[in-house]
Length: 336
Image (cartoon, rainbow, N blue to C red; front, side, top):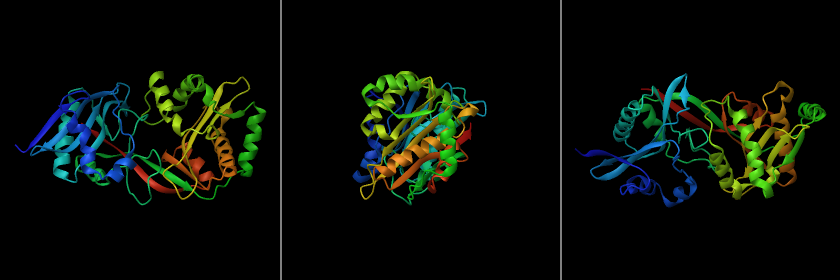
């Protein structure tokens, strides 16, 4: 038989089959563009590689996150997916992964997702604009491969582009004044005491994200390590914390400079979260306005509002600050 699927894990003698595949199917330039696509060892169950006539042609990682569900069905996820452009081979591997997932007693499989929404997930639908920093890159035909294997769209996302740097809208300034009367304070993150800041942010972020689509919690150490890894990208001016009159965190905004853009100054808005209590309604817009005001004063000419799920509050943030959709992404699912 020409096709063979091998199981492997980090540290195994045959793991090179999995690890080396991207270098075989992407150019050196794209490898640099792709950035990190690390395995989520907390939820990893197995890595699968499809060999065809003894040559690696496709790979994926199968994840079992015990908190991951879809419409109350237990779910697993497929992540770290790579393949040559061959529908027959990709379906062979994906069908095998479905069979493996059934052994864990789940009813649904989601992809691409490296274990949770805290990690890389979603496929781009087009490459009409260059990648921005921390935006995963992959071949577009992966969408057709997933659809051919029986996946369908379960969520769609966008990134929006704002070249007007428009801020201090009257309605937002009015809301800012009202929130300040309630005790709102906005400050930059203190990078000199980053571990203390993260300790305080952790419970707030978990609560703020708890109603997000496919949300699952993560351990504090995992949360801390993710932000410490991003520390080299952080400029405290663009990482904002909102607090009430008792210094309790009620809002958070994380943005960073797009180092891929060498022709202009672009800021990527990655995370916006606020306390869900009604009295703090509009805080996301106020934080966004505060950020744009600072960015404009520091010479930024463009903003990207990244990875917004359609109909989400963050989409409203982008619309308010004149963002125009310029990238689309999809997350797929399949009953098994």
